[in-house]
Length: 216
Image (tube, rainbow, N blue to C red):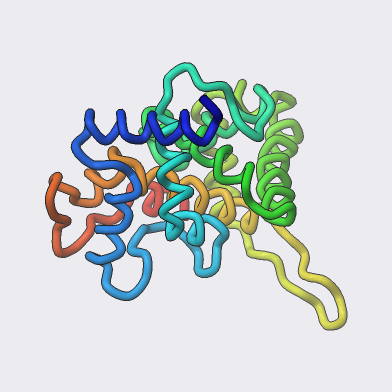
């Protein structure tokens, strides 16, 4: 069985277990949101938005990411562990929602530009951790990790001087990372339920996401 067939089988298995798969939940969420994708924390035009609108991608990545013993895709082990910890700090529950694995699968089929931007953002948090505490982000205490996130979320975004390229700041890297994590989390069954998914319908209004109040 090839990789594509394996992912399709896993997606069908997941659908039987939960009653509905990720692709169908996102489709219904889009319908509930009216015009546009009604997921919190995703900046306009962010790469993950096009993935969430792609039914084929959701059918494969959602199933593979949910497989307990699946190896990291796209990331090396250190990057995968760092993203897992960082995502958990941005949105608690991200580990259970397999956010890191889902993002890795999406990035593996994304453009080189999107891949480079994501890795640059992940590296920026790692560099900030080493600068402040002389340890990788994944090895910091929760308080230290949150301190870095708070600083990143309240820093000034990059500005472009006349005739010069825009300077990317830690705030920009945070916004990029937050969009990826939010899209991955709130398109999972766990995230959908947090937004009001009852198994049949969504609430008429969505509760504000936890990460928005903590790290914006």
